[in-house]
Image 1 (spheres, helix red, strand yellow):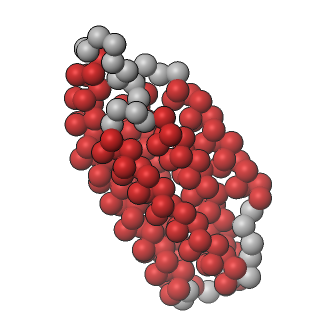
Image 2 (cartoon, helix red, strand yellow):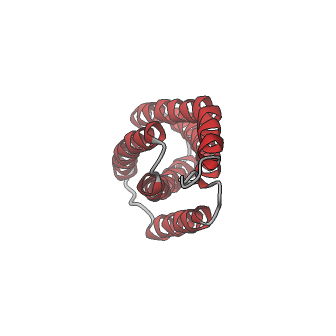
Length: 170
């Protein structure tokens, strides 16, 4: 493969690293605000730990290819996460909308890692390919969990919203 293909892979790895920093910020904010949905909070905290491991794997891939993370992309990811967290705090149905947004974000990550696996395979970078396959499995599992639990979260929210003095949104 050409040097250009390798540079695309490196750039996409930087994008993924920034995406995982954004995910870290979003997961921390979300978990910190959840009060009444212990299963969801526990799964988010578990995925937060996975996300931290994913960041390390991506950093190793980037460094092995002779690159470094992008401060600009990383900062933009964190700013985007902060905006999402602030926007979600004002919704009366924060827990439902947050779950939906998390599902969408997980699927964006799935698409990103699918692309990275193909790119790493095309240039013969089996280490990056394996790292991204490992991350992809975690993202698919989280996406599947969120989708499977969205009806339960919705029903819990609706039940709590009917109870006087209860906070349903978080």
